[in-house]
Image 1: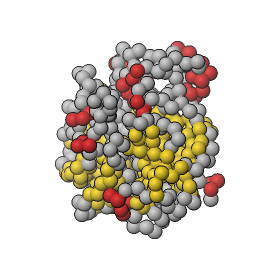
Image 2: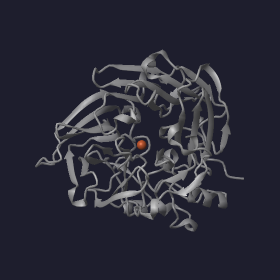
Image 3: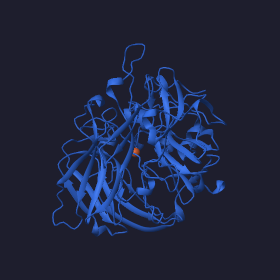
Length: 493
Ligand SMILES: [Fe+2]
């Protein structure tokens, strides 16, 4: 028998689920599941198996410290089968054996039970993606774990040929659709709080074909990256970490609004001495939308916050928590000339006022010019309150299609009382237009503690779902979602 979860984790729709289950043939509430959809909608979910015993329990531990679970919806022939299963990380297995929490705060090994000193702390809870026929669950503080895409059983740590010597690997690698390469990196590559970056390239068969090590200007979170035809980009976030602070029991990240914008650029498969660190006045870069080259220059599109994008879970450098309701986001474009004499960035323009995050584009347009962005957004005029009159925390309550060429925007509002998790977008077929496809999303009904799976056609987004399906269990908030075409899964070919 385990202890109760602390209050921060024991309320609302987001209390831990802790189960591994499968449900065949989800029940339709409305519409029909299009029969041309054949693939797997996957999500990474932080879902703690045991109540944290660490004190103080930092907000980032509550939000992102849970054991990783992989949630998968298999969609084929108009039917949807659901599975969710925890990743059997080393951490998960150690805690299962002890029947209690042994690991302390988010990315703080000094807060762990001494019995697990030196063990792999990663939870594999941030993103699930496919490369070279392998499904990988990843959190940026460790190496990914390979998951069987059919059974969701854990196969073990993914380290092809044992060649990855970085202690970490990003949850957001990038792919080149032209050759199937995956470009990724680890930051804090020699251990937590270090400035080391390890840049890796893997070919379409999953073999490592390039490696370069270098140091970032400061020990920052580098959550995402970007890839163009000739360059790999590393945008630093103004979130810093410090070994002495961790040892003293402080939080891993603090927000420093005075730090300059820094974007590292290395030629594809380049050497450490080819890295250039471009800089600009302070900004807060979030997730990458896309990057490409135009007229010999790099175009880098990303979300950007006008304050601390992690205000709810990370303090500023003075120890003050922010107010997430006051932070808004925009889609922004940088232009970077790798060969310019100066490393000062000056070209920065607004693409769209987004008020959301987690952009998705047609995967065929990665590393190339593109036109359409799909993203969850927040309509602040339609927030909901619980029975005590408190505003229910909401990240998103709309899905939005941004047409970057015309500036047109189309929204689908999820409805009274509904909130949304991270969606996926994929084109209807291999030859479909860039904006002609499907959005699939897990919808939350926080006041009812229930969820639905919702499928929308992007060319009639505002008309609402073509299918809504009932989940017979409550689902915790996942982090990132991904779509894997059925043809990419070896067992389904
Ligand atoms: Fe992310």
